[in-house]
Image (cartoon, rainbow, N blue to C red; front, side, top):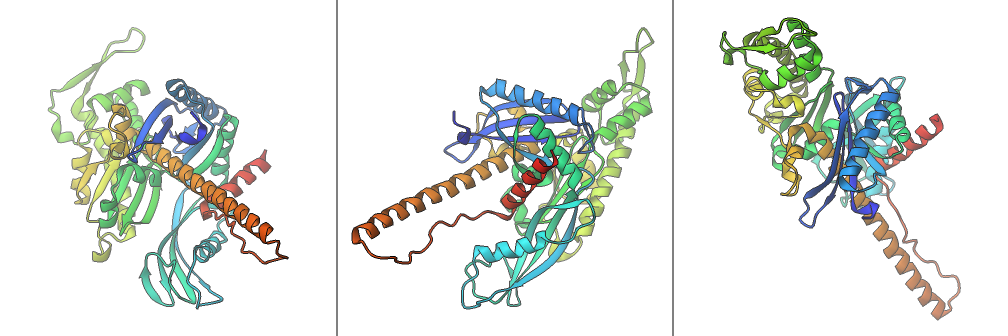
Length: 447
């Protein structure tokens, strides 16, 4: 199978690394061709802190995915998260030379490029510039300004910023694992592509992705991303609390959490007890499930309250900014028993668990349709989208070359002297493609 026929998403998480290979079928659904996962050993709270271990884990996941699918992985789309991610709101404008000409894509690009030149704090780099809404000559609330007349083009932007060092480290790991970096995208954006419907994004929704090391938040309203945040706590701290509170090893704490854990202490009776084998000939340990759920409950409440502060910061309590579709929980941590009820109780908002199966072909492996793989599926969708864009650009170039060749023949036949001909070949790049190129250059120079 040619490289162009399939795409790859790589989710570098705190607890696991997932490589997922897929392609789009004729119905527009995603067919999973292979999946590989490995234990993530060099990542802490979404940030690479051991390059060698991370490279090993990436290679392990990639080899498993290649073995499963019989395909070779070349270029990958990677997600970025971690406590260094922050977002800000920014407004900017451009004054057009000729207001008699309609606004084109290049005007929008020019405006976005201007935002990319913003001076950030030392060591920070802009990851995404996401336009909210436009203003043309003072006329507000314009979704798509292309094709309109106007002299002054203005826009509000949601700007996502991250640490250059963290981005460079991710790029370095990908390169050293023998892969090409196709694109870098924010993980909450990838997860939202996989689990949210367009109707939810229109109505207003908060996506909470509870991972091992971080909890990612993305808020949508009127189909546009309005707010993003990364909270540096996830399922890992819950396991840590159980380990400390029950004086057991991490492996047992993780098993206890996934098998018997609940976010709602009232569910367990006092006499429900689970026995854990002791270490090296020691007596088995008896742990009350009520105590276990109390430990889990305390930490989960803390995480949800932090997320709720971010939702309030966005302005959820204002009538105009109300999130009608409520909350969607995804990620491995969302599988915790009674979590949905607890979130509804704390926030008073409708809540559901988000599964990435909506975009997957019917015969996909059930395992992939788990909230655990929401980010990986979203990254794969992003990779497929990039592939489509590339294909379209290449088709345009071929078409334009064909037209130019035909025209040259006509001109040659007419044997006319120098006649000015329009330059048809005009390949446009998105702001993000330019940023990706700049990043690749940056990584090459860092070698």
